[in-house]
Image 1 (cartoon, rainbow over the protein chains, first blue to last red):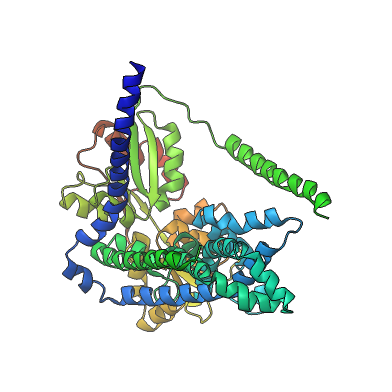
Image 2 (cartoon, one colour):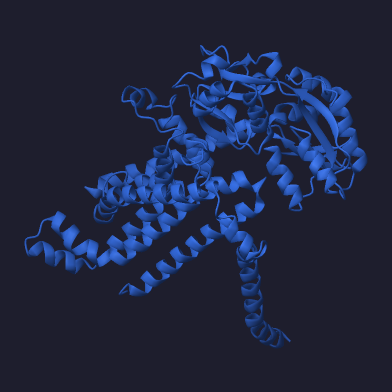
Length: 268
Length: 265
């Protein structure tokens, strides 16, 4: 009896797997498909030809790419330090770095306001330097950098720690400084991984909504990025919101595709 | 070296966790427990963000049903209903959106349940005393997005100003927020010098903001409209809630919160 049950279970398991996969696939793909089918393609393309939409896309590209440059320039050495050194409080540092991954974006926005806003901790300092972030494009970049940086940092740290030790040793025994080893050996070897980390961070930045709205506000051409424009148009111009959404979905697909491709380039 | 570092490190993380636990416990004690009522139905109310304080208070003394709220910009809530969401009641900060939904067959005949007044909201210590100050260069202003009622009332007021003054004020607008709650947030955080909100919102900040009145001839007719979403159950309780807001105990709460009696639209 028990044998028969076991055999039936063994036969049913592959079926259960197929059902589970099908459910997951439909659930995850349907909203994406709906974005492209809810409105006719012509209407979709027509609504892209709109001031708000064009400004939002331009601003999104500009701010996300700026944030990405900042993340790469500062994040790469940080990731190298974390991958190659052990020190007191490292676990705490790593936790702090990863926190934005799981933090609600609106919380990130409030935190940024409390830290960098006019009434924030650094408010008086920024005021005396005449630096303004709230309601400025620079504020959007700050919010994006805050939210997206862990995606790159984590990936880059993992990439550096899997670089073959013997390569680094060889570089050092040949007399290269750490800086040279980092620049000439570690970075080139880890490059595909670094690039895919950058792509993930870029994707997260493109989708950022809550932190941007709370910290930087929403104004066409200045702080209203594509996700904010989608939210603003949702109530009054649903096709316009869908069109912008479609563009963002295409970006996401391209980014993920790129990451997968880079994964194949990786030797390991 | 690592050997004597490790124990220290292991103590800091638990300390952090303990701190978070304390925060959570304190937060948990602060919120009132949700007593499970037996037979009373639960109504979902989609309401304009400006109604948050008043409606939350009203819910405590409303006996016929338990009330659950979804507060956001009225336009967002209307769009959700258009897309098939079905709260029992839709309470909007204007009459246009409920009228539109009713015309589309998605809402019962709307009733005007409250009025409000548009004001210039400024931080308590602000030197701004009127529209003229808003037109000065360097003043940062936040308003509502054109799609949300507070934004369209604001544009109505600005549209009645001399074109030069309107232009100067609009040039100072730094952000167009999706609902009134987020305008108030920007002001209480000191991120902006002034914003256009309802007088009830200023009251809700308990002294953090003060209201600067607009000239009477510029004041728009702010009327709040509500209706019952078609096809939802418990319409008797839904109507009872709307009645309570118009003339029951909730209407007193509304007035304490700075709302005006329903204007004759």
